[in-house]
Length: 80
Image: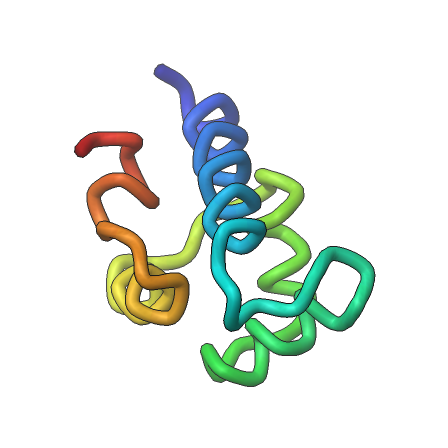
């Protein structure tokens, strides 16, 4: 699986986890800003994650999984 398809698959799981989380604002209501602030990253970084243009590094991905209350392996790799 190539990097682009891996990033796109991550983006789909990331969006799903955000939609499923009661703590994350709805799409169009400050979701990227909220996550960027909680994660200590730029809003551009979160935009790229949602678009599937990039993925968070391992350290940040663990923080993101905790923020979303999902399994790290599932979020990053789609493994349960």
